[in-house]
Length: 157
Length: 450
Image (tube, rainbow over all chains, first blue to last red; front, side, top):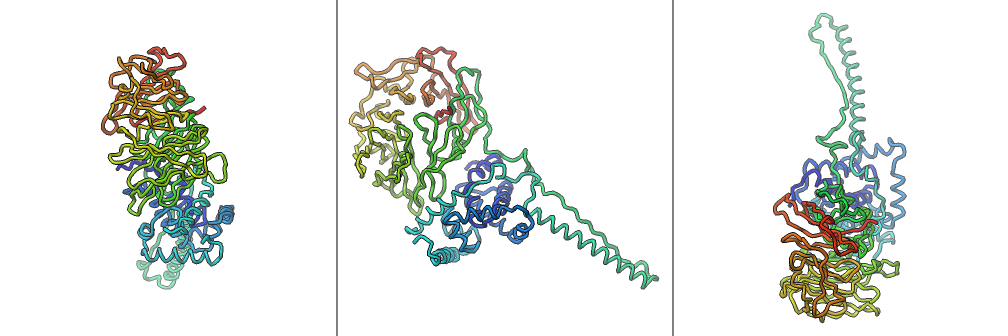
């Protein structure tokens, strides 16, 4: 495996950014938190790069999500502090997308797992390891999420 | 993963890829921009400072009260100090000047010879051992962009590239202009568990012929499919034309002649050689595939079609030369033009022609026009003075120049020397119409910007 230099890390990050950013938007519904989480993950990668770049999207998503979760309380403060927040813009995008409307039925924790599985293609084991939860919890959350979406009669069966 | 899961994955990818991206300048933290955490820290520090002031006031009040109440015991007075200062968070080596850029350091070291370079064209250059390729101008300079893929195909006119994204799941078949490789457009999303193994453009650049492998749970390929994708706006653009790829073997798209409505692809067999040459007749609703056993040992990676998809050429290891055949049938495989034995040092189709370029006798660069092949041979010399040991890499996208690899470096950081020779319309080029330059990674192909 090639040595992880700063330049190489930057290159890999840029490639992974679009997919991970969209996954974070779909999870947090918050552009600021998504960007902050990714920025923090980028800096984390500069300090402690991942050992393996084969699933960099998964690594960035997990780290960014962890960072954004630490900032959930702070972020809630920010919504009211920041005039002209981007939350309306994100809400409009989410509302326009069929998947966005489905995700809106779920809690953020459920969204984190569902997006990781169906959009980033992470296995349930990878999600469990990355988010620090049991595999059974991941499986149950996915099932509950799908059931919740089906309850609304708009999920694809 | 059941069908419902596959459907959901496709729905997620389709929809979430619609979410607009922020401007590139926002992808990394801009120096001086406060993060949520930093802003929160500032609020906490401010709150702390207010509390500290209140605490000081309280302490002073207590002191005054104590002094008033016990003036005979001054040594017992407590002291307190509190300061609050918010220092900006600065990461070591992180700031506008230290932010790594996706644009890699140019590796080309062009020698004098600006007259030979034509910056209407550029090169695809391997990006180290990362599965990606940079696109840069012929004369060098910073890459115009990077294509992240293990399989990149240049359109017949050289102006577009097609490739697969590297997602673990639901990878995408994408295209981008060669002049703006980061301006990626997704044309198809692969199914769950599928992995792109190869792609080529149709001869009129209106479609893509691509192959996918279906992965088993352990990551190995279970089977393979070949698809056509019509980019002319039809209602069902994606069509599976072959789905009987065998486990462990690779399907390699070769060419798609849209006028003739036929597509060709190869299948590897034992030893990695091309075991079967398959031609799909696409005229009817169902593609009719004719499989032909390959009579000679051919490495599948050497199989290339002419830009108009009329002919195919490949390295015949048994004959130590190249062999060519018309797209629609391989019955002529094993037949070699008289000059083919010289093709051991590489060969390439000259775009827009039926000429195969190769290094012939006496260090001369030859082309074999297969339309003029007869018992006397098909070759003629284009120029002489080819360095010993040079290999043919590829022609410029319009056929007006050829790239030879003069020497290859070995070991990390070693440079390879390439030779760019302008051919033009006059086959008698002078020695002044060439330039050498060096690369630390492999040159993979030529693209056209205008």
